Image (tube, rainbow, N blue to C red; front, side, top):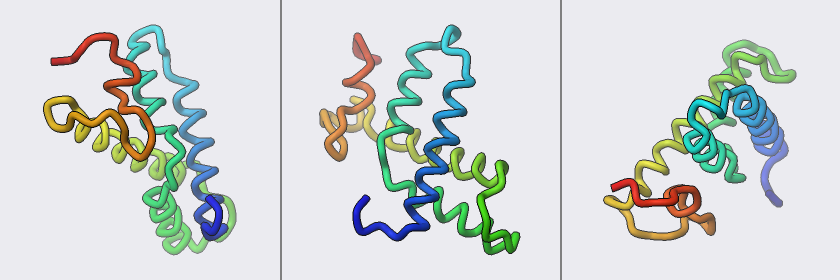
Length: 117
């Protein structure tokens, strides 16, 4: 992320760490393909601008200029997961027949062994 302001880089890194920790705590035995799809989509190396907006609003509202509180990171992570969901939904074969999004293979192409529909 060359040229990206330091605060965006820090927020992106902290949100990515939170997401990775969250995914590592989920039980993949119940729905391994779903967890793999969630992880693949949410951990795609995006800029995490939405998460940074959440964390910046939290800093402003709380007056805390230090490290984000765990609750703030949880909200930032949730916003990133909602965004990842919206991309997956937009990329479903019935809506879009592309193979790539920003250079990444679509989750429906990457993980699905057979068509969903």
